[in-house]
Length: 396
Image (tube, rainbow, N blue to C red; front, side, top):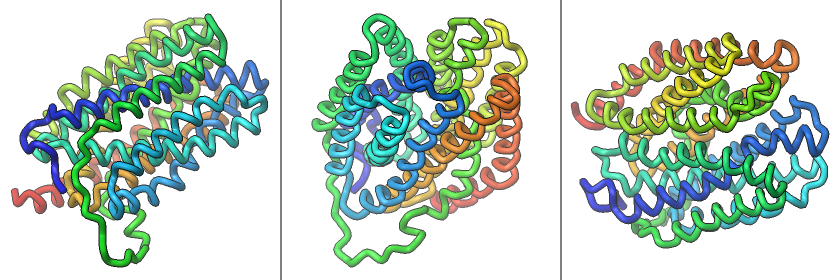
């Protein structure tokens, strides 16, 4: 099994996967700005409970991702991906039936399982169809589907919510996700020859050891990033700016811009300078968000955080896939995405409590410290670890 159409990035499968992922991600991001409002205003929960809603989603994704990696590397990609995407879509349609915080919490836990399988599967499938020498830019371009959904979905979801209510908003999210499922059925999945020998399950089957040093800075960035998606709409309401939708659009614009060039720089020059740029911009962005609580500061932080995220996330994902064989792609993607989700979940929960103690501005200033720790660890260990193993793999 190998990449489809060696040397040709924009093949049929890559295009279908990118647009299918866009549709699925729109369904996902419909819920990001609306669930915090639903939890606080409709279910009368506390702001800190918003963190539980995202954290429990992350916990279930964390539980399932390692098993997903094993399944993908043992039985192949196609049906695991399609079935998980179907379950993900159907679960969105159940959200309007949740009438209490505990019911919603339980549904989020179940929904997280399908999200964990779907995202791990989609990333593994798309790496299968990207030529190895274009992996950095391919993963970056594929990630733009998440970025565009980040720009489109929050604004559209808030408009639909205000105009028609929660039922229509949830059903629209499910419809978008269903369109993604339809597109995914037309992908030409690479032929997968399953393992004939009996599989012995050890911790290395669940976690790719080479992914751990790359996962740590990814998790730390996720911890800070989770505070943006969980609380930015509530922060916006506290400030009285009414700019949450604009924030998401600018954030997505920053991610899109950086994804267009970050992967090419990684493929040509390696990760050192592009990662330094991503960390510095992210740190400045979070500092501005916490320190300058004005409309200008609010929106400037969005572009800087967006550019930083568009550099750091796909670059670290590509780095992980560059140092493993295709037989371990399921495991490496499960390891990396699990780390990112763990960071988002732990960060959202912890930052939620901090927001009640020191307020949202103080919470975002703490996020700058988290990112500084991530930067320090990356250049103290991760960068050298990657370059040593990448040069060994490529013989350079």
